[in-house]
Length: 549
Image 1 (spheres, helix red, strand yellow):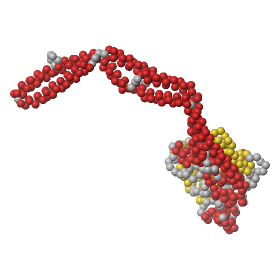
Image 2 (cartoon, rainbow, N blue to C red):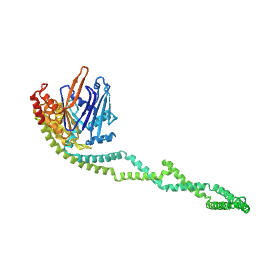
Image 3 (tube, rainbow, N blue to C red):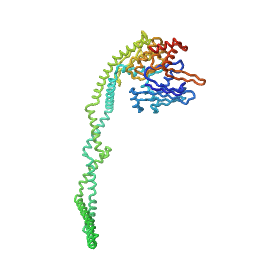
């Protein structure tokens, strides 16, 4: 829903701030007052290409801000989240335009390329006018309208999901077939790696233990020499720490016999003797365990060399052998399954069958509802002065894609004897707007377009047909927010809200304003549209009557 439109210094608009509500809103005014400025400015905030000459005279830039309530517009919310631009249920689009035609775009205050404004704009508003491009001529829009009318939501969601699953596996299958030779080479390499690793009989704990063992054995003689010297120092037959400690104890005991205060040192010397005896036992035990085992050293060196050779061959440090081996086994099993069971082939076939089943159900639903929708739109077109018109929503089979197996095209013939042709090739601008109105009204209850703008949809019609157009716009306004720029009182009188565009001319400038009409002003405007410049009691009475019908 479009909540607000703010315009600064755009063409002949100096400042304009408009708040809108749901329902059908009519915009009227005299020719040349600037009714289309509202649509043009809004279109710029939605990504329309800018050009020079849009900035109001003597202004540095134009600024246009549109505010939308997107609480129920799930496609727009999803798009904003995917592009990391979502900031809540209020969406702001801002466009700055400079005198040379250059511009800047913003989504929720975040600078964005103009293409992003256009992308989100397509999810917010459809504009139908004689000069604008109609989204209704796009195959994707026509498909979307039929799917909405047929209530295909859940089935379409299921079909898309099944297609995505199938497509993902199918791509893997194609990649597998294309890379089969490379995968076979990878398979053989992994097989050799795994076999080489198993021959190592390797664990990292064992590796660390054997490295330490090798280091100890390689230095056994030197360690033994050092330990012997240490033992001599601790408890040798000649001068040693043990004998010195005994002498120390004897001297202290003799001194203590003469002075009791020295007696407390006896405990210290006893502790020293205990520690020296413990150290001596440890060194003796180590020496008894230490052997110069040449055969053991050779065996350890051979193992260490094999480990280093494996490490160099596969470019892996020993500490990563075990984790790498686990990865090799997992990948090897994956490849083995591919080669032996052809898993992609079986899975791809199964998923494609599931997708095809869902797509066929979707196709039947589309074909059934296409006939109903065609009859409904044909009836509306007949009421809209296309007396001999026939509308046809045709469903033909296509190659499988995410939306199923169908191609949908809207065709029409506008007179007897004509052949049905695509609506873009048959209808003029004004006719296309009325055709669009008929299509949108026929599918209004489930339409995904929250805002629709019809610019002079009533060109070339009048009388009862104009009243029908007004009634259809009013009906459409029950489901979507609808705007219509109109010259016909019969159309404007059916609106829920009525804005009038007024142009004011000054000596040095021209200004266009848009104001929401109250009940009495609305009567006066409808009377002006019926009777022209001179408003009489008769035209006022007729205007009141039109507004109460």
